Length: 465
View 1: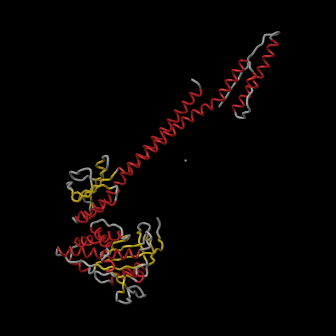
View 2: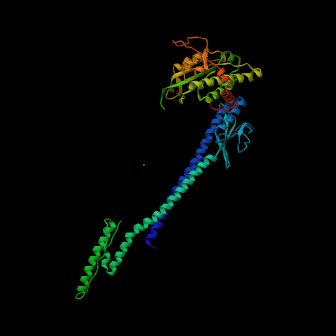
View 3: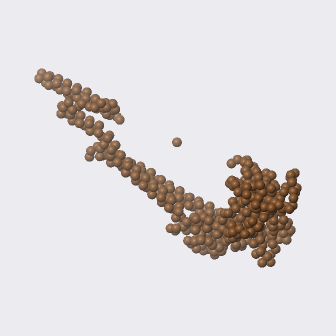
């Protein structure tokens, strides 16, 4: 077999082996990474779902649980959610789940089903380290698998293309490497024939050129030797004994000044209300209202900063900048009071007393960042704007909304407010008097957007406004 063919086959085989192993390794890594990411996503979703469902589950709050499972419509990867009791009976469900759970819950989170379209994850719901039920979430694997298939196909096509290209290049490289060797063979054959004229070599300056030059010198020496042999052979017997040839070939504390709005909302007469109810009933009551208030905040691009007893604090324009933070805070306050009226109507139908809330809103500069210690810190906001919102909340009437003058001064806000009639008031801990304003709810009451948002929040949709 010619040397060029053997080299071509050897180089091609090496390229195919290396690229095949590399392609297999990359594809295996991508498939393993896909499975890990899918499991991590499913485990994260089921863990969050189970934690969020623990308190409504213990309180037997079917409405909150139904609102919770309805959130699956927001995420296109989630095809279904279920909350089940300890015996595997479905309490609330949304979407499609590709399996049925029977028997008591397992002791830990697990992937319980995987078919061609979805993966189901099951985990026990714990409340104060006690298993009270089960949560089941089904994840659509098709979008992730489509991305994986595209990547695998791209890797396979790239690997195949590189193998073909490498094979073609190996043939060209082998023939190029063998060309000077062929020339050496020709020179050797010419020397054997004594055809010195064929030994003329083009001017190469590499190693092959040096060998060819050596062959040229050798040919010239052989020609001289032959001449001497022919001459001396007439007198002496010639002796020839010389021919040699060789070729050897490796999180910090602090914050930043931001512009935003702060909304405080608390219960009117909470002390008297707490005195008349059991602690568990108080918690249930707060959860009934605050779960919807939080949805109202998120629907208006707000962020719930904290729950302080009977008070909820919602931020607007923090941590994400929002030029309309004051308007979104105003809209959220109107939504909260509308939600309160709707919940109170249902409570009164059941013979329960109505619960009234008051709201205070302030806008301005505040310091946002991590406060606390290196061992325990919290992201929050501080400053006069925050304190003023808390103080003005205490001045609001039951079911009322008060705003500071700084809120009114925000762009486009003057048309939605009116003076409260209270005049300048002195609030605790502040030297400068405050002029409170009220919301003119007639500007919102007939608004289709507010009504749609209210329906979405009460149904658990919570669409942004």
